[in-house]
Amino acid sequence: MQSLLKLCPPALRGSFAFSSRIAASKDHISMVAVCDAEPGALLPEQYDALLSDLPEGALASPTVTELLGVEYLSPAPESALRQPYAQVKGGTYRMNGRNLLTLPVSVPRRCETPLNVHFLVDTASPHTYFTATAQAALNIDASKLSAYHAKINGVPLYVYDSDADRLVTDAHGKQQWVPSHFSGVNVLGMSFLERARALLEVSWVDGPSVTLKFPLLMLPTKAEEPD
Image 1 (cartoon, rainbow, N blue to C red):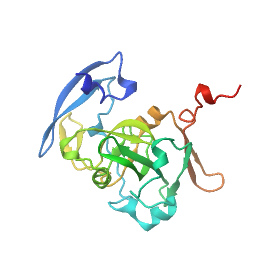
Image 2 (tube, rainbow, N blue to C red):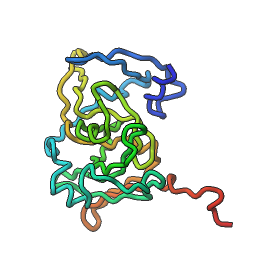
Image 3 (cartoon, rainbow, N blue to C red):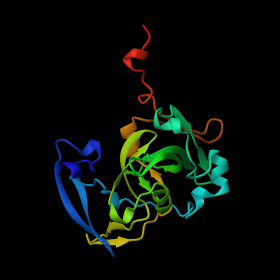
């Protein structure tokens, strides 16, 4: 039970009852931990987003590489393991205003060398997701895991598979599995922004810009504080 509890976002732990359930898809059955929060809370497999302007392979395209200034899934500096970035500047992708940025990602015991992972910042998503391509580069086998532990800019977080089928409910309350509409997109959701206590700034004052700041990750230790 304790290991399942780790899969719950921190905001949903505590007073909420905890339970587990079986989630079945077309080709596999897996145990998924859920928190019985208030009605309307979305489970990881229930969130979906139509991102037709970010097709499979877009994050690795020359356009996005030029926008973000770094190649997708290239090695990040080893120093990122010891010292999180204080802030990251991203870019706005095309006419639909998709805010993208790059963060170093590592996976304990699987991929200790951090990689530069491009993300779509989605404040509508309660959870954070990796694509099959990113999972493969990080030595993750999503077919065996419903969720897995990664470090994004040094912040430990459970993340999910953006390519997996989504569980939707129709107007009559019937549930069914459908293909994901954001397959091929790494989504940086509210779970990360909350855990990192990040500050997201999106501005159009001098043209489109997006900046993610981590003020609480950069607080000095007592030994470093000025007298």
